[in-house]
Length: 147
Image (cartoon, rainbow, N blue to C red):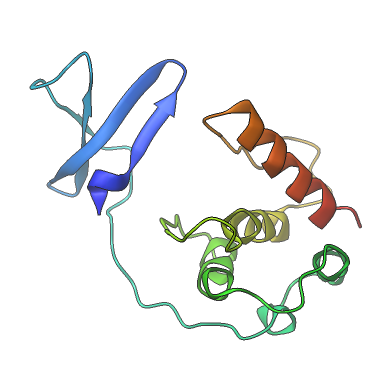
């Protein structure tokens, strides 16, 4: 699964090519053959995740629930059932699903639930590979967090 992790930030472009002693091994276009062992990542662990059948069962803030239902969601999609709770619990999540299945809302809902509204500092950073994708993410976050 690590082969699917790709870091595309303006300053560097790395691909995770494996694990070595619980550290992620990164390779870039410029350093092929000279891999970088990065220890800043936690150990990658696959875990079984129970599905939560409704947004009401996720113990979400009432204002966030209001935003979810106002956005038009009635019940969580398969990816949302499995991803939102671990994000809220503070896990780093790698999840894959087809377009239009609710991946963006999954991590936005989890992130919004974790926000401390009393804290005025940045609490969530979303990095997107294109301007169009980042605009779409911003729209979803704005609508879900309206209340």
